[in-house]
Length: 111
Length: 115
Image 1 (cartoon, rainbow over the protein chains, first blue to last red):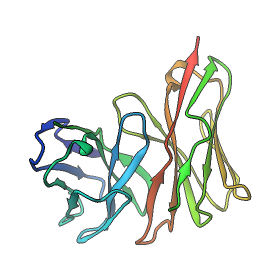
Image 2: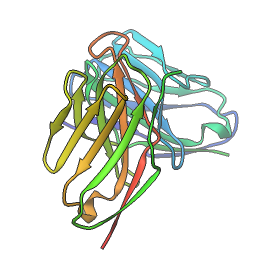
Image 3: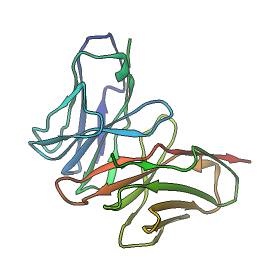
């Protein structure tokens, strides 16, 4: 299994641009999550999904959108990028919330 | 809102000594806790977990202790090695297995090893 994969690894955006961070898992996990991690800080939950077609907001959802049309994929959409969204983004998945597996992260800079 | 926090942001330990990393949580309804290790430039890695109906769980060189009375979680690493250098996060989950289950992370403790 590849586990949780994320693309791209790095991205620089200009203020106001949009982009989609891709996340996929091949472990047939029902739960998937998006976190952001600012330098020297812990992880903040952006959005999560407990199954295909179901998504819910986490702690810091503003400025982001997600969709979960399949069990495998959980893309994160940034509309109108702002400097405050400069961060490292981690996607993760789990079975019923246990033993969460994380992806390698996407480092995003908004200038 | 509910939050998970850590007592110390940094911890320096002599190689070979035991390390103890502490974590306080505030949500008394949390029923599952996880410790993660995050090395520089990488995503968090699962270390060990514990359910709220347990007080102690042991893994390979690691032990997690849960004190529900004072809402305190600790991670003990035996015979700390240079490879243990990382940031350690505790995380709590309320409603494990339910549609409302989600993980909330603490801010992390950086563990550094002195030779």
